[in-house]
Amino acid sequence: MGDTRLSDDLLTTRSVWGSLIAGAFRDPTGADLFTVHESATGEPLAQVVAASSGEVAEAVEDSRRAYDQTWRRLSPRERAAYMREVAARFRAHAEELGELCAREVGKPRRDALRVDVVSSHTSFDYYAGIADTVPGQIVDQGPIEARVTYEPYGVVAAILPFNWPPIHFSKKCAPALAVGNTVVLKPGEQAPLTVLRLAELANEVLPPGVINVVSGIGAGPALVGHPRVERISFTGSTATGRRVLEGAAKNLTYATMELGGKNALLVLDDADLDQAVAVAIEGMFYNQGEACTSTSRIVVEEPLYDEFARRFVEATARLVVGDPLDETTDIGPMVDARQRDRVNHYIEVGLEEGATVLYRGDVPHESRLTEGYFVTPVVFGDVTASMTIAREEIFGPVACLMRAADDERALAIANDSDYGLTAAICARDESRAARLAERLEVGMVFVNNYTRRTYIGSPFGGVKASGFGREYAPETLHEFVRAKNVRFPSGRGPVPGWPPR
Ligand code: NAD
Image (tube, rainbow, N blue to C red; front, side):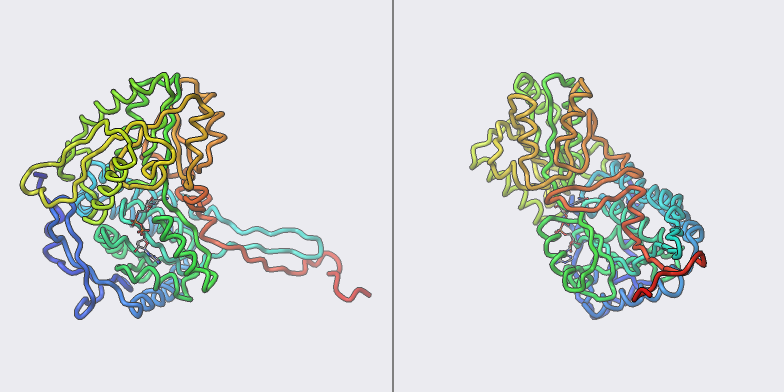
């Protein structure tokens, strides 16, 4: 069992979490509620209001008010000062946030603290630091002087998945706020508490309405359909992304899409095997495989395949599956019963399709964890490209090992996917890896590493069915502004008119 639970006080004082609008939680009396469970035990953690479409509209209208009356009027430096204070709040509450995140998502608290929570304050500090780097410009067009300014959109709807709440919160809010937008957030309904808590802390600093939060399954479509939402930033599955785009078409709302992945790790025949196994373990099992970036297809060139498989299975068997609050836990439970059942279904499909089971782990037997949503880590061998488990995103700890005769075949397998988020290559010869990286149809390639810690400051995003738009990067600021061109006579010569005389 874990240490003292910092989040218990919070969860005891607030058993029902309302929508967060204009700087305060709305009274939840009479509202529709849904229950959030602790993934490791199945016990209820809290109830959350499923916002009605009326409440979503109020959140958007309040957000617009905050945009018009306060946030947009501030200079970038003034906004940056607020954002740095938000980052400081997140740092001060890091332990509590990491624990809450671990309890509702099921991810190890150790990783939530080192990666998710660190990312939340780093993003705010980073975008505060570059908030004033989207200056306007004056373009000399002879008799005309074009004054080009970059304006925020207004209200941004940020729709989030469940899997790393602090990261999603900050990678959307920080760039959007830095350039003057306000944000209405919609967290994943499996794990909305960390997002609500982060927003509450941010609201202790920010003017009211700059960040509002609405939860519940109906809130996403209601936000997408609201005419005052002028920018959508979506992260989630490809299927939902398509529905969001259909909804966005109604009001022609500009949207970016960070969607699913079925990522390949290529282990070339000159790879350092110890390193390749370590990369494969982190790539595959980090966040118990509930990662858009999970390298769930591990393509190994023939000369190394058998030895790689042996060592990968040994390393998988050493991973500790257990309570996310224990410091030694590597793999926690799935977020909820639905996700557990979905992953177990894919394991059955893999067996039916004839994949070889190289390893099947166990679930924890501690009595307090028996109702938790644990799935045993599985390693399938000799998976072929046509198998469902090699084509569909499983989003759980299920590894597919695949054989490739050479680099060309490995590349063909990697690119034979609807998705195109990330890929990884393990090879001693980095120029060989670089040549393959050029031909991989993805947005991001890792060579001889698969670290989850250093995205901020360089672009992240996919191609094909993994979506479009880039996050974490300096240029992400530009995705939250649009150009306005105001053209004056320059006073330098007559402005040509029509009809010509
Ligand atoms: P999901 O698609 O089920 O839900 C994502 C969000 O969309 C939730 O908040 C949900 O309520 C909302 N939603 C559902 N229907 C909607 C609609 N019609 N209109 C508007 N909003 C709607 O995804 P999930 O299960 O929470 O997360 C897992 C998925 O997210 C995986 O596919 C994973 O690959 C992807 N993901 C992608 C990235 C990335 O950056 N590319 C990062 C993390 C997760």
